[in-house]
Length: 78
Image (tube, rainbow, N blue to C red):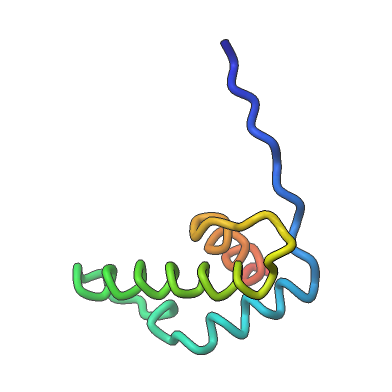
């Protein structure tokens, strides 16, 4: 039996800008260190970003930290 996963809608330009504002408030995200302490702080920062982002758009389907992180990586590439 195949599990079909529904794709989420792409982030709008407004949502992309909001995501960038949330990330700018947490410079730990851009830290290139990989120690356990830094990684824990990054994970916590992404959880905070996810909570505040989803609270900003209650009428939208909630995004996971993984989805927002991937969206941010796509934005950075452009």
